[in-house]
Image (tube, rainbow, N blue to C red; front, side):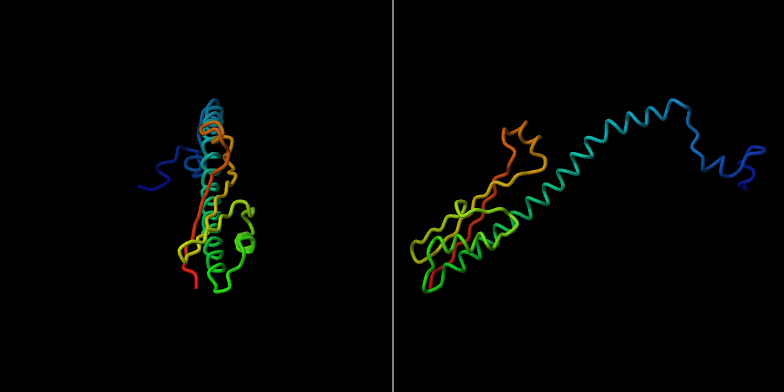
Length: 146
């Protein structure tokens, strides 16, 4: 069976197989379906971007807590303010403040705890569901002092 046998007399290959044959009213249906699906695709995209952002902030907080604990474990221990400044400097893109960093020294150990509220792009959705538009992330690190 050849392709020519599938064509009507006077019909080209392009007309038969490559041209979309739709009645005039289906273009409107396509537009309505696109309008109904677009918000969900948009929210899904924002959700994926939020997940990536929250993961990045979480990893940065864990690194900053570990860096602060390492800095505070030396034999000549720095002050709490110095450890807090070191932690804030270790997470430059997060927007961390010294008030969010807690330094605890007890029983020959130092522990650095960080609690940080990070805004999310889908905040309007979380505001409606949970009553807040931020996610609170925390990280801690504990090391023995020398």
